[in-house]
Image (tube, rainbow, N blue to C red; front, side, top):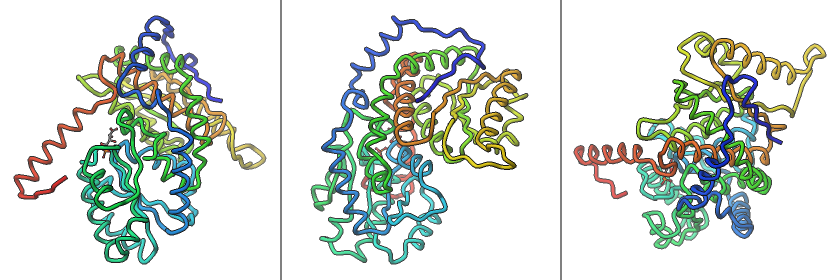
Length: 400
Ligand code: PA5
């Protein structure tokens, strides 16, 4: 179960304007990019994903996932949430393509060594520079080791069903592929093969994720309340939202939320800038600012109530963590930083599925309330255009 506390540490009246809520819901349901709610992935596709994941696990000690932005952050966040950093799984999943660092790429290559590898390239557009370059490099490396026939078993491309360079690659080279539906944007694609294939290779329970996600899509009232509260706070000069967690494994999930919200609503000089803190670590650093600094922020605290617990001096460590979380909210509230609290009964795939659906709904409702399009990213396109121009000026001709 997920519970929402919009009141205890918040000095605002909650709006539940059912007319406005209904307008937002209808707008979403009729939005041409509403695939994330209108046609959730089928059981058949889930089965196909599991089949390919099994093949990868049988043939490979490493799966390289090449993706960036909404094409990687979801599965990357869940990997960091549910796999212990101290265990090496049978098929290790390593992410590439989210930077242009020669150091990182070389280190990964050295680390893989002679191990058998599969690659999942994920790009909806098939035109993203980082993906093009990284894929080109890795494919070249793999060609030194594997025959074309072998490559056809080891390269899996996840992209648009019809358009783009990567789709052409599938046709030309005969690689296996999955499609990202045209009406599901990158950051709304958690329940697509883009994320579910790497998660299935990690042996994470994608069926439970799907069950939770479907349940989470019912959280319309809560998503509307949260979105309208955020907008109210924004117009009271609360311009930053700090996503605060008390489990370090949630850190990359806050990165996923940050991308979802910032890329959806940060347009037309509007939007709330998302930041995050991992406590109790950051209470000893950023906490000072949150308590007494410029009062431009509010917090959304994600708490995990149950789960593994250990006792120190006959006292529950979980309980102490909860007491600290509650105390921090009270102290920050007294220091002019209000908090919304979202509590998960426990941290598992089902709860994360629900929470993710909730945040997707909230990102769309917030964007609609800001009167911006949640599904485009013109600012990202602007930088890409500039990069292309400067590459051209430097006589670097890439055909992506
Ligand atoms: O949410 C989004 O749409 C973006 O973050 C994209 O996922 C990101 O730019 C990567 O795009 P693509 O999947 O086309 O390579």
